[in-house]
Length: 389
Image (cartoon, rainbow, N blue to C red):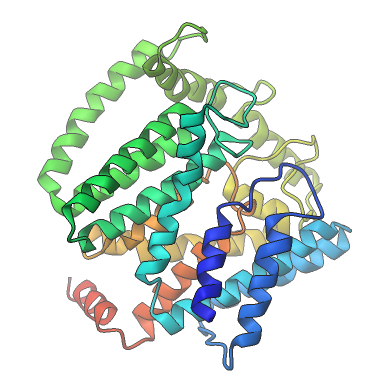
């Protein structure tokens, strides 16, 4: 029964971001929250990984709860309680099952189905020309599509049926096409990173050749498109280049209203003036009514500079030890693609906006716990190889 509940949770996570505004009836409140409570009720014992990262995460959530009460942000309070449950349930399940099982990975593969169907029927909720499927923001859609791509890449080596392999390849090509149609820069860069990690696993020489050829190509495209202006008659390729080079360059160098640089300046001005409380403002919205659009800065805005910086340090150390070190030494499987695709694609959008953020944090904590405490031969051997090197 517990496995069934987890499978339902993983399935419904892809719909948590459907509502744009605050509503009493959301997937998180009506479906995910009851399922989390049901899982905990059914457990005779909760397996709690006692580690420093887990302690910092719990401290973060406690500060978030106090910040929500202090700022009278009661929707944010419910969100903090929900995140607390997700962290507990996820770490318990991962420690008991020794990670995600194959059924879990197959469920994650379904995160692109609604977007593919919407594309074929010509439906997009976004009011712009960028494709977004059933989601109101193309960046949100791309996050779920990237999760689906990562899950397929993990499953691919386990498949014996050639027809099924070809089918997954076709779907992955369709996923890449959806990301291109969304014009999401974070998703495009996240996709490139995922593909480079896959290439690094199979052939470091080929990866070196690809990177060497990309450097002059990117330089040429930057010079060609950096001063490009929007034109409705642009081709799909020109639109992508415009988003990657012209718009990105303008947002990072110009402080005009609405640009990333302007949002970051507003954030640091608010921090300098003391507008951000020591326990945070319990919100992802800055004083000017705009989102900060940066996952790490959003953490500081939510729980304050002290707890926010402590959590960011812990978070970066977890990423380094559980993801980057194994990749650097080439002793990893494609399960690393799942947290990497999320963390990279959502960095310039939001972390706390996704309840799934705490599932990925739980995955990192489990990897850390397993590498250091558990008797798993796989990670004992991995860590032994790292120490020998």
